[in-house]
Length: 251
Image (cartoon, rainbow, N blue to C red; front, side, top):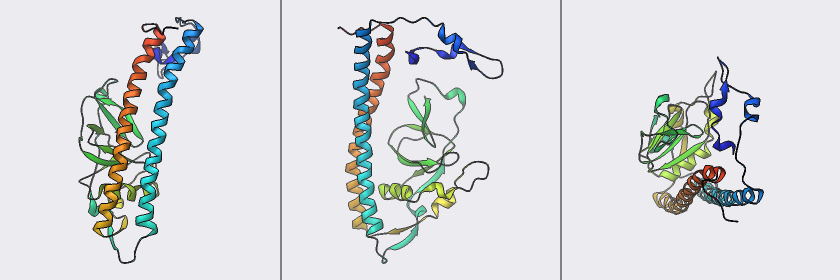
């Protein structure tokens, strides 16, 4: 019910917007009969349960891929492998700031920041397979964008033209990027420091085998993620219609 109310229009205060609880108490709402309330909750809960199941499955799949990475490239590493700077395997740049007026609630594309999605817009910067992480503020999270039009904010670092995509992805996660913080007033990581992270490069056959394995695992993750997005959209579309009575559930 709270999701369906525009609480922003009840804000008061001159310098700082303030929500007064007395204003909330006086809002009139339409209440369906208790059996219908329970039926609505059951419909929404079933969608949330499916979303949660797919989310947990994705976590398990990524953990599996990371376990293979750790076994093949950390535990079974050879002293015959060449040590190189990780920056040889990608091109790195910063994202770009998006003006406040460009954010829109129902935009076509996600705006991504150091900790994930921060809004929507109708413009995009990238439409390719890439990796990004936080440049300032939140450090240490590493994300994949798989050929989705997105806007990456200026508090991110973007990895493109990547050779051995999943090897780089898990190398960045393994490196614990938060340890490279050089900020004084707020956390900050530099492109130059990331490019100089040292990794040991195995033979091409092992790298290719891992890329093929990880590709198959992440294909399932991407399929699950698309289902999650569809279920979230369905839930968010149904929610106000069920609460308002525009759609009724037969008892």
